[in-house]
Image (cartoon, rainbow, N blue to C red):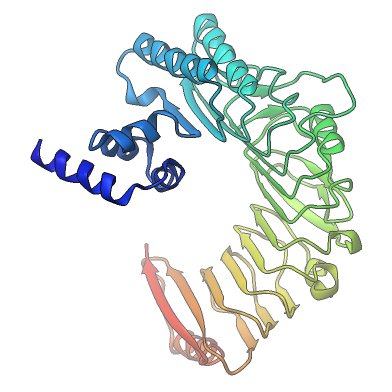
Length: 381
């Protein structure tokens, strides 16, 4: 009690505006924000009207208590006409009743004109269908959907016309639906597709404002666009055929995982991606020699490369270089005099006979990184 009075007194003295308190609370997770709200009346008031709602079914032992809690909070925001900037919902869907509840919560969230909406469906095996109201919401700027199905066609000229960021993770979605989203969301700057199913062809050519694109997959998919033309060859892999993107001069981040790439991908990278700052290739295959020249690249990550024999980098703006592999390639690293960071991870199998030449190769490799603060990890398994 004494501590509570002290904090309340401090609040009275400081008289922090509610918007400042809510901004501080936005850096806390939902449990921390709830705990700290009981320490003083101003903080509790700010918490009760904060523009961020975060509901997680895992915080409740009884599903009915969770649903009643969500209904009560949403109803209060609706009655008080409080604005919600960020709405996060993690809910378990296992039957028609829980699916109806999810529909109700999502539709109410869209009625509250949210800007950021994050949904994760637990269970359901991708059978739960996302309500049509989500992609009809013109207030949405950032949308993240995990663990459901998107298979409805939408009427009207525009859907999510102000959407700037779209993340789809473990989502079943067809070619027609992703095409409609791309065509009707002209402001998209960030597109993440992770472990999605149902896609065969994705054309990104209409996303002229695209800055960040990430594709991680274990499903077969063709991706065709001026940004990067990819042709399906085997399940779980891409092979790069063409990169020619004058209209994608804004792209700053490109992440590819489990992608098969030929060496032409790296040719003339600077003119293809003049603003590219982050290039991350994880678990990729298909290239033995790479040569990258770019004045914009600041971060390069090559993780678990398989057959790389020779690598040459001319990257004057580099600030961090990450490399992980089972073998040591021939390396040429041309950088300015300023210092940068390198993180090198090498793996060896138990029982492998490590000869003197391996250590000589390692010495040559690290010599090329002599201008960097280098961390080396060698793991045997």
